Image (cartoon, rainbow, N blue to C red; front, side, top):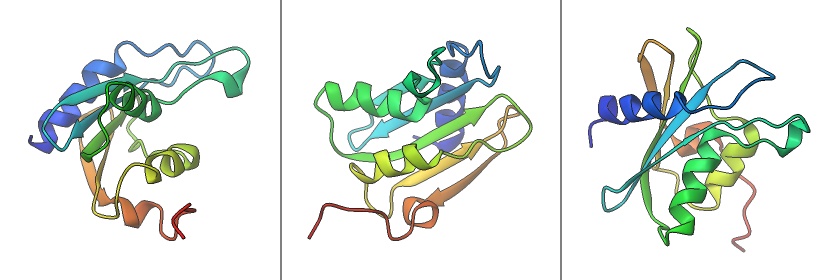
Length: 129
């Protein structure tokens, strides 16, 4: 799947964001190794830590359906700034992806940058010993 198409799917998912507290919408589109796409949006809660980021929603949907191998994720926010995954999402992703996994960070205009996961979370905490 082309990265521009993945960004578009993330933008569509962003429309479902529930963000009455921050006003910041995020969408994510995760593509599995076999090409299946899972989307997610941020969902806030008045008890702020109870909310969940778009990236973790997309991964949770995929994992709950039995998927474990992934190629890339696109993340798009609702401002002119690029939407990068937060630290919690980076560590969450580290559980399921390798260093070559592609993270595409986009702004509301669909402009994007791409990174290898290892560039966004070098030396991640790991249970592999």
